[in-house]
Image (tube, rainbow, N blue to C red; front, side, top):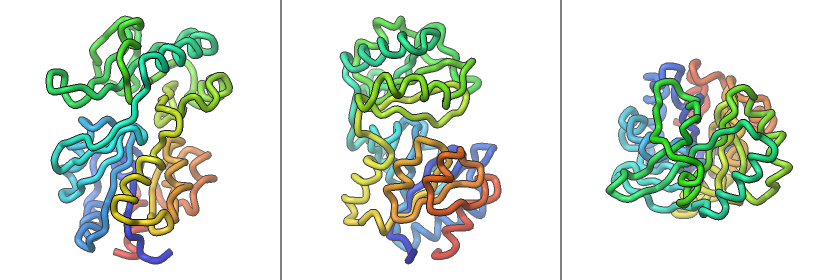
Length: 268
């Protein structure tokens, strides 16, 4: 591949190390990308409010695709520039399917709100066990939880693997939603049908007049697969889920071994 005109990367497990920090070597490589005038785009399952701590480690990064493609976010101006949501009716229908095949599941939603409740708010059922230690989301009963549009529905069954959950639920919902996961321990993420990291990144690339074959993208989990396939050159991290290795054009070193920097240093 020639030097890319746009670099896109997942955040957790890809850009960040095990300590949730960007290594000096990787930060230096990102700095050279930006100095060359090449857009560096964060493409993540995180909501917008979880992006600024990452951007502070790599000053100059502006573009972020959040919530697995459902939200476009300008990190420099702290502003949502686009979003796709699941309606209350879609959430209700999806919840009914979850009850049928994953009856012990609990639910959470990621919403985009106004100034009165912050840029985005994650809300969960009282029994919901958060996948990330230390987090304590606001709680709502299911009937209330499903009553407002959301950019993402999270489905939690801690005693199952995410792979097993996907195998059970995907045939039931078909193509009515985009179903994926970024955490292996019993957590699925549902976005509106046709929405993925690939579609969100494509919107950003189009704005810059950049074609897919001019993009290099990095990722490590199933929610990155569509993006890696869309990009001209998709790179799986050494620590990737097995399905990601299959989807990528190459595999680099792990996120704790500067795998992203190793590839970028070919051109920058």
